Length: 162
Image 1 (cartoon, rainbow, N blue to C red):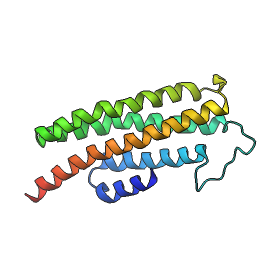
Image 2: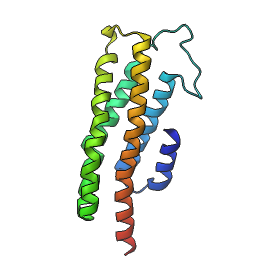
Image 3: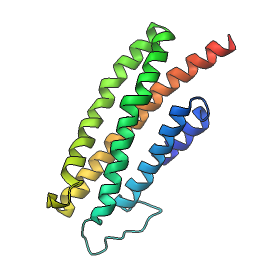
Image 4: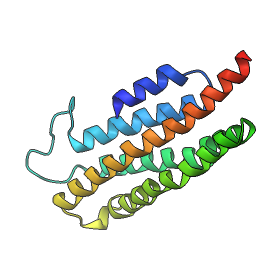
């Protein structure tokens, strides 16, 4: 996930403020995800096999909701609008990718509903399984989002250089 983010920043950084801000939010989300999942470079803090602290889970859920909201209510609209301006192919690609992205939104909302509240009473095994499933969905989502951005970026740079 993080390598994809670095590549995205190198390719599209500085092209649109909304995308820059969104990629920054993506980085925060990935870092927080890695801490919760105890992925390198973060050490497993849950050696006694308990859920991470509720404050950590809530922070992750808040970052997740902020990221999803920025995508759906800021960035996607701009990208789809620009893709529509740049031709039928770009618009049809954007319209095809958005429903695929929405599938991960549903999974993320379910995760948030399950774990953001202290009284959820979830177990470590349920948390680990759901976090892993969410991580896979986010990986796919980032790939689809990058495809949207790439389409916009290519059309924009072709238009500028023409």
